[in-house]
Image 1 (tube, rainbow, N blue to C red):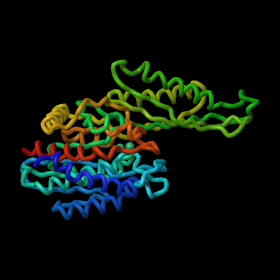
Image 2: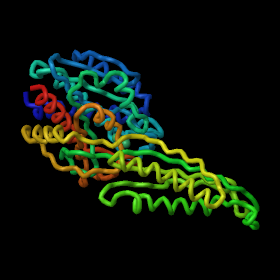
Image 3: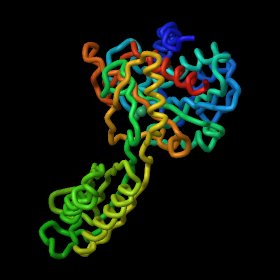
Image 4: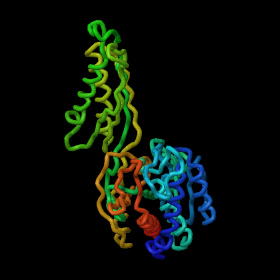
Length: 381
Ligand SMILES: [Zn+2]
Ligand SMILES: [Zn+2]
């Protein structure tokens, strides 16, 4: 069996599935329709199914080794602006990250693997997870047993920063760890003409925003990578009233947990310290969202060898400060998160992930399917 030829043979089917999922997007933990369609196909092809809410763990084959392949199924609360026949039919919801493509690609791989299961010396597990977009669906799947007995795991993300059809492979950190913070600065409100009778939280908040810029520039080792962004400031209502409170919100990103710890500590210290220096109080909450996605070097190398063997175009993919809950699987089991280039200037497919005009070059989705089949086949030799 040649995974590339098999995937080419069902290319139209993969596109049709993708379009169907694209027309009927479902938000995190609401993936009822999508998971029902996936489950029906997998049952028909002989998979053993375990349901985890709207997620699916599907096994086929027997043997000593188990490889897991994962796709995410959720869409985003975005109003689609593409004028295409398969445009989202649901107002305010859209597959703007490409998870529709991930689901279709893995469904295609599931079909090919089932048709040739005698050529796989072990067990293949397909993990269709809910709620990747800020819902940590990966954790729910792990709690539901997705990694039980698994020796290696791979996942794909379609990737706008890579030319169409190129498989991006990277050792070590690929996506960042991410967290959120919120600081409420509580001063004393009053008349805008009598600032001396108030504790004005507005200059205090401004000072905090500027001081936070020094976390990356002065506290983090210059050889490391980090981001601190204040993304919302709220306070005050009108011209002549000094408000009592101002709230700041933001996000921080990192590749190493030690760096993440520095960011969390300094954000809190700065917000509290600057506030108290001016006689105000700060209530600061710092929350972890996702750990960094770190590919196992041996598994990344294995993926490169598999791509090479089957003549699939591949290359290095630069790291990004975006985050992905695939990180949770990689904390527990060796594996790699791979990218499939979908950028196609000629077709106008250039808009970034989460943009209302985001789209994928469908003509290369079968290459992702081929790679998934090839990874399973080579791992279960
Ligand atoms: Zn996304
Ligand atoms: Zn995504």
